[in-house]
Structures are given as C-alpha cells and as structure tokens.
Image 1: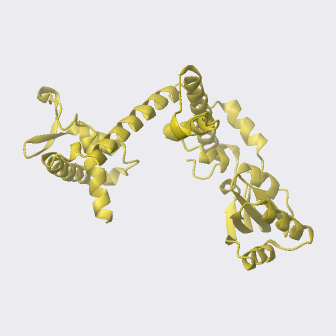
Image 2: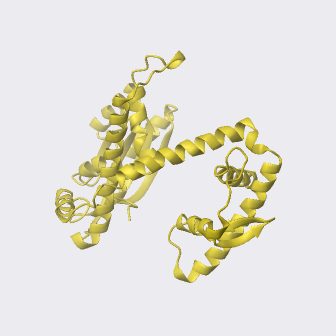
Image 3: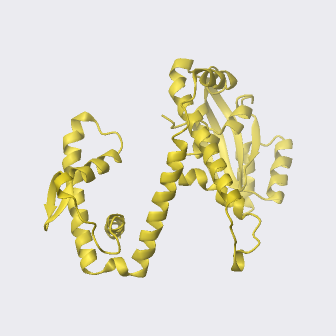
Length: 308
C-alpha cells in the first residue's frame, strides 16, 4: 500500500508539469541532459531542483545523493510515460489533484515572494528577546514533569480545580479522571524550557517543586506537576541563531496573516449554499495563511525548540 501511495505521488507530481497530457516543447539547445528515458530527456536542471529540495546533504554523500536522485527521476519518468499512455491525466481524480497542486504551488509562491521582503531580525531585537525571556536562556532549566493531557469541558475543568484546591497531585487527579471514563494521556516526562509553550513555561518557571497547575487551550487541558528542575543556562551568543529563527518565523506568520487579510478585504467574496452567511469564514481562512506560506507558526506557540 505504501509503495502504491508513493508511486501515485510520483505520477501526480510529475504530471503537474504537463499541460493536459501534452508535454511542453523542449529547448534542446539550452538543455543539459542527465539522462534519456525512451527518448525523453531528463535535464540537469531537473536534477538540481530535486537536490535543492532534499535539504542539507553532507559533502561526503553528495555524489551518491546525486546519482540516487537521478535514478528517482528515471523511475518517475517511466511511471509518467505509462500514466500518459493510459491517459490517466484525464481521469477526474488526477485532474483534481493536478489542479490542487497547481493552486497550492501558485499560492505558496505568492506568499513566499511577499515574505521574502522581510529583513533579518536585528541585533537589538535579538538582545531584547533574550533579556525578556530569562526562563528560556539566562535562567533556563530542564524540568522533570508529571504531565497529563485530556479533553476540555466545563464539568471536567471544575472537577480538576476542586481537586487541586484539595491538594491532590497531578497523578491522583489523572487517575480519578480515568476512573470516570475520561481519556487521559501522559505521565512523567523530561523537558527543557524550549520544548514548552511560552505561556506554560512562564508559570512553570515560577512554580515550586511538587506544585500542580492546570492549563487550558482551545480544545484541550493540560495538568502539569513540577517534580524537579535542573539549571542549564544558555548564553546570548549560543541563543542568537535560535532567537533569529524564532523571530523570523513569527514575523512571517504575522505578515502572512496581514497580507491575506488585505487581499480578502479588497476582494468580493460570496459564500453560497450551505456556507452562505458563515461569520467565521474570514477568520478561518486568514488563519491558514501561515500554512500556505510554508511557515512553521507552531514554533511560535511552542517556544523555540527545533528552530535551528
């Protein structure tokens, strides 16, 4: 099944460059050929594009990666030729997938072009962020937590608060919730400061060992008990690249939202049928803008973990 999905993805991605089953004429004078498959050329430009999107490849593996990438393109071309021969590009599912891929690529390209205008966060911005968040850097700690996540409802929230007021531990409360048939996930975990959301970290950093706290998000709750904390500070020089990436991602998310808001404000948008009069449409669509831009806004709400 996995192989079938992979082959399907290969065919659809390659068909996306064809025009209704017709291949665009190739300018052979300008083409640097890497391979020919049944007479159809695979160019060095195609190979380089594939490698550019493969991420950082160690220099020692570059040659092997290039040869493997070319073989992947050969396999792709073979599958595409068979797909075109079977006229699969004319089937409803493939036509819809091609249209969706085209729209995704174009919308992403527009937002990426817009976001490219942003300048790199300045030294003063980085220094200020470092100073404003000692819990992440100067006073950074690695925490041992009893952490439980469960669904959010007024009844459950009230019950948890009552038990916290009675001095019960997070583990005791979690067991009580499970006894009532409520699904609870979690247990003892070790987390450095950067792996927690900034909102939660601000409170955890001030908590005493043994203290339990209840946190709420849009659709779930988290019960956290600080079991232990070990100081492991990070100086400004080491923190700089993380902060720069974090701030850059945050700025991109904000600009993407603002850009889409401006476009929607200028456009004439009419929702029809069952969607007519939906008041949440504009907010929901605008919230998708950072995703369309390929920006990891999740990193903004989850601290700076992984932003390297």
